[in-house]
Amino acid sequence: DTLRIWPGPTTRVWRYDGRVVAGDPSALSFVANGYAPILRVRRGQKIRINFINELSEPTIIHWHGLTVPAALDGHPRDAIGTGRRYVYEFEVRNRAGTYWFHAHPDGRTGAQVYYGQAGFLLVSDEEEAFGLPKGEHDMPLMIQDRRVDADNQFVYLAQRAGGMMGRGMMGGGMSGMMERMMGFLGDRILVNGQPDYVLPVATRAYRLRLLNGSNSRIYKFARRDGVPLTVIGTDGGLLGQPLKRPYVTLAPAERVDLWIDFAGQPVGTDIALDSLPFDGDAAMGGMMGGLTLPMGAHFPIMKFRVARREQAHDQLPPKFKPLPPIRAQDAINATQPRTFGITMGMMTWGINGRRFQMDGVTSSETVRAGTTEIWEFRNDESMMLMAHAMHVHNVQFRVLDRSVAADLAAARATLSGGYVDEGWKDTVLVMPGERVRVLMHFGSYTGLFLYHCHMLEHEDTGLMRNYLIR
Ligand code: C2O
Ligand code: CU
Image (tube, rainbow, N blue to C red; front, side, top):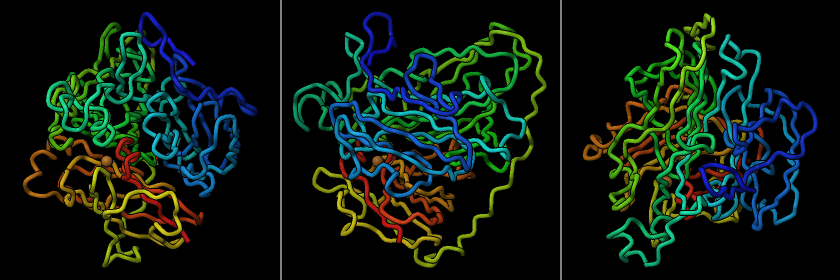
């Protein structure tokens, strides 16, 4: 499939085309240039999706953030070959919110997502309405970084020859092998598959659903005019109440819903959204020499252009539905939480020293259905300290607390003011030197699920493990 993204040659992408649709046609739409599908479902709805693999390699879909039976969760062992079909049929159990779906094959998740295997899955319900902006005033925005060659083709991993210690690393950026371990960073920012994205808006309020769909880049979103951002939701739906942040930090796979009101802005005004600088070298373990757009660089993301007047009296609700209190004492392991140290061995990432094994029976943590546990992610045990985005399949969790090693506190402080830990989460940024404890409840679906770093190159090189719900 090809798409026009830049002037000149079209770009080859591997997108989900959503061709076969039965039922409600409004359930499926696409971002403006067709780059990514937007699937809209209601809580409690039963959905059926026939997935046909037209790639030339095995793949499978994971419904990120959703609670679905293990066989439908997109475990790499369920990957299907070219021309094969996988039928997903499940009931949407999750709260209303901004979820997504993407490829999840063994060792190739980074490549497949990069070439376009990702889409939005937006869940709605009655409770969630609260008079929030709807329709065209409810905008999903997928932010990704890419690298392109002279023919406008996406380039994944450095094509440069040379090993680990070769010229690539010392002189002109990282070698491909290095990137495959450390994480891929592109130098072109795409929003919904479009560069220099400008969204025409009316003089009224919008709900923006930001998804960091990048492989490994962390963003520090802020308005260029310095007006704080109003956050209304996180990975697992609305917060208990809107919150203000000077900027919002989003690690790969994290989402936030923002409320932004353009009322009173003169037609013709541009409001820019940037990524602010942060101490990215600490985030990347000091391995970033020579990249055009290193982690933590300052760059523009998109603009809103006030294009027309519209009489609207949008009121930001002062409160949404209160979230249940966080009760650490409900955890069956409250006195002795499970700990997960991020480790690096001989050229492979791991968790507690063990890398991903497809065979889950002999290599997984076991938890009991219907119980609540505390898990602690520790990013202070590896020789190579880099930021990680820890994601757990099948659950939404709450962040209990965080701590950071004294020598790395200053680096973390360059972006921790943008954490939104107050809501339901399925992915959490764990900065170098940081420990994060989360509280989660395992529901009734038993079987094999995954937890892993959502920096896709880390995931693909071992930073993933199975866990079994019994
Ligand atoms: Cu969005 Cu296993 O990941
Ligand atoms: Cu990682």
